[in-house]
Image (cartoon, rainbow, N blue to C red; front, side, top):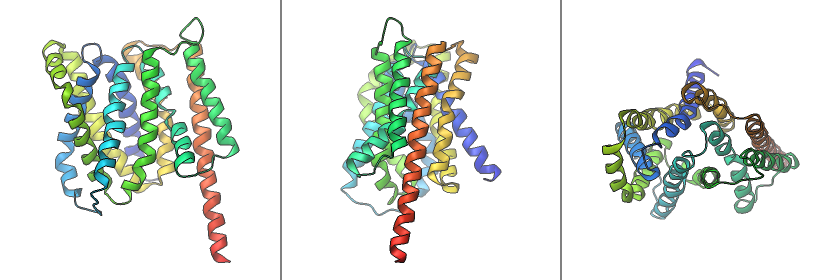
Length: 303
């Protein structure tokens, strides 16, 4: 891995990890819908000059893709950010990052159901471990397993991310990643426009600190991080790049402690580590299974 690719991955992980902290700050005075609308709008506007040159590259445009793009934008951007913003009103940045990190589990199950991709034995073990970790996080809420509304919202966010990742793949075969990013962002903005009145109210009542946090979210975790992530994906296999995403909880926990003074309890942190361990095991086993399938296919073709 060259230095530029390494730098791009480090920047992406830091910015996306910091997003959990910035959301925690801004949700004090910004509504979930208004925050999502302003963040995505800022990111889309900043990326517009860059994405414009890619809009007609690597394009095999099909009208039937429009509903898929709209649905994916709704799930992967609009609902994802709404659920995350709502959840982080009551869930700490570190816990939120651990829960969102369970998206690979959702992706694996969806790929099994829709694409008939088999889940290896160790993948099933990882699934069980992950569920145990998430349950331990809920148990840390006190008084038994407590799946609060905020916690359920963040889990819903993980579901949105998992669904988005699985059904985005066919579109990436026909559209340039930057062009597809632009399509999805502007489609998501259309769905979030009903929260425009909430956003206007928030802009008038929110203190400068919260507004600066939202501007940071739009400029850096949204615009800059998408650029560095897309650059890394052009230089590395998707699996190797995706593995870096498992560092997000470490970044968000550290920044949550330094900026917000949030220190997760021992049980919460232990549950988060167990949950992420299960997600890593699922990802590794799935990648290994695909490698074996490719090798077997190559051997059959040789015969």
